[in-house]
Length: 505
Image 1 (cartoon, rainbow, N blue to C red):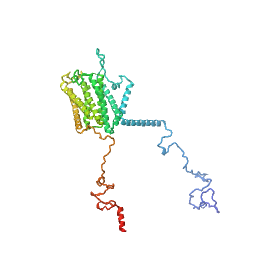
Image 2: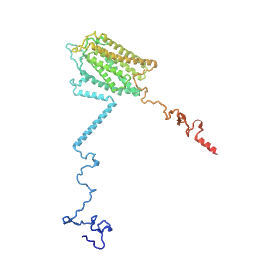
Image 3: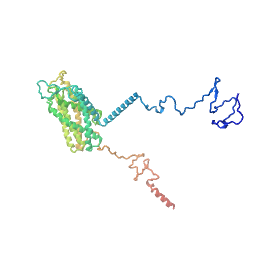
Image 4: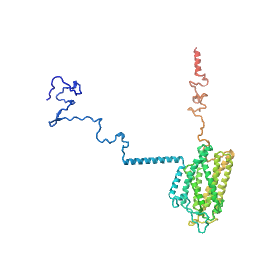
């Protein structure tokens, strides 16, 4: 049973935040007070068991306060960042990643350097091979086969002690050829980029394509200027001196040679192998006779291997020299042509004489000797045990390869004669095989061609003398408000306005 409040004025609690008018509200017997009374001291309340006790106050919100629990867990905003104190495995992983990134950056930089300076990669290979040899500099080191000649033979008892040591042939010679192919690759690219290109620029050759041709021919001339006389010296120490075809078959098989002969033969093989790589990798811009050039190199390499393997090296020496000397004159004549030298014409005639004599007369003599002397001089049988390979099948193969080489030379002889004819007739000695642009400057000026307007008229005929465009409709010029045409052209707008004012006055 509810007790009513005592009569009299109600005094508001000093601690209550409510205004006086809300301090006391009449409630029905069934209503429940919506909010607890705001008192400084918590009133005692009976428990369910009927015992009175202190009433527990509801705890206030914890917003803004420090949260209890595990505070070491990172927030969402910092989940991607590494922990403040990484563990040891994490440090090892980050170290491995940084090393891998450093290696990738170094390899990428090295690749860019090799693309810019093409001599860097072959130089790297040469340095690696030399370093591997210096680890154990002795003939027992397998790398020595790449650096030095293999298969030296002991002197026979009672032989001349002053005679040069003879060298045999074997599979280790492939390592020698492979290594010096890399050496020639480095030599070619380094000389062309560091030595020959400045010469081309100094002589006023600015066009990139023409520079490339000049550098190629200059390097070729340098090589054959050394190996042409070198080959003649080697030939002078053999029985085949000055293209003696009979000596090519006497004493067959020629299984051993002195060091200078073997070195010359294998170095020449390295040079032609390197030239074949240049063609196949496209390091030189292909000429119009690219197919014939590849065929020539393929036949040459086949002749080199067959002559070395089956002991026809005396014949191979003669073919080497005919190509070396004639190529020297060819390269130097091209250089003079690129430089616009006044002696280009007379020198081209000298080149034609050298080419015709060496590449055709001498080679045809060798071909003729295969048909006549190959069978009659020296043994003529096939014996694998004694390495006797001068027989009917080797005769056919040798003649077929040399005839194929002669066919390519005849094709080039035709081009040479056509160049000579044009030089005599038109005073031009341009090589038809080259495809460089004729301008000497790298940045050629574009031809000034009149631009077409949308109506199909060119600017040269579709503008007035003062530069304003004309408007055409169906091929006829039409009048515009600011530019009447034909008889309707009575003057400018200002003159017409002045005339109108005079008429009004």
